[in-house]
Amino acid sequence: MESWTNGRINLQPWQAIPDTMAALGLTDKDGMTQAWFVDANGRLTGGAEAINQSLRYCWWLRPFTYLYSLPGIRQVQDWMYRWVANNRYRLPGSTPQCELPTETDS
Image (cartoon, rainbow, N blue to C red; front, side):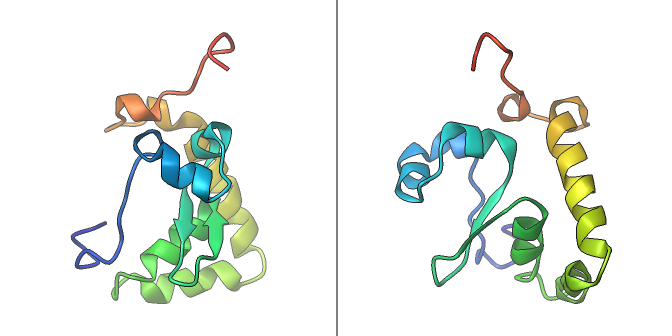
């Protein structure tokens, strides 16, 4: 994503930026449950909306991000995002940061 946007997006795993997360009012649980996007005005969005916000910085994906505002599409994307977020550790290319905590870890 960073190379697609000429460095205009800074992707970081939540575990690597605890001070930034705290400054934004986000907890570890917030970081574990969804992706977050902070725009130039400091507006914070999460989940599928955050992904759509970040994709707007990639010129060739920008048109697709407007679909999120269409009736029904938002709900489908939110559901798909939630499914991927809940199963991310099972997907190809997952990293240790993708692992979900066990009940004893939380």
